[in-house]
Image 1 (cartoon, rainbow, N blue to C red):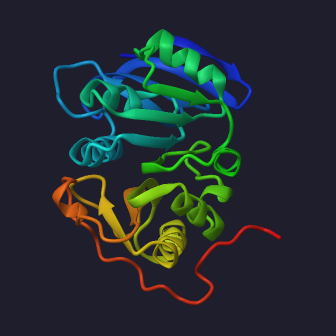
Image 2: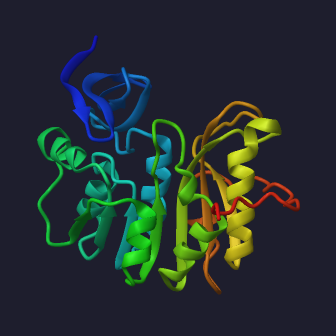
Image 3: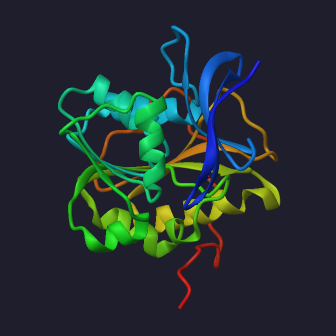
Length: 255
């Protein structure tokens, strides 16, 4: 049974906040479109894991490494930064979310705390990276228009910008919706090719226990600067074999 708590339009799209059952759990979910895509959500039970598998994988990675400064590009209704602020007493998080209306929804419906360890920037990711020089221990990217990553966040130039904003031994970790094999794997292939060209190490991790060769699903793509720990020790599910990088695979900005 569903209960719509709020629905309306923001400057960036139409959304609904719905109390519902999601993946077998009672939950509060932010949907985009007319409930076409689940954008953010929190479980309303006693389970320890976050509602979305990829969010839990990102949480595990950050919580185990315990960085002091984190940048998150794509805040949604701030479920991940809220969990991290509660779990890590020293972490400082900058969140880039262009839709200021989502911040209000996060405060009204999703328990976003007021904290001097949280800074919110209502702009797009590439503009923030161009205009700010702060370096971070970790950069997280979870930015979507419905189910599509904006092009400007997955090009070679974008990965160079992530690299430039990381401290020595810093890590970028990205939520990627893509197929793993065949024509549906284009997004994952392009982003891995950009990551391995930019970073000293790049890996692709499963977001969930099982995966399909063909169907779109969530992966966590990571890139690491310099000598860094193997991330298998910090994230629950295994890395998968990366694609073989081919000439012309890297996506670049338009001239």
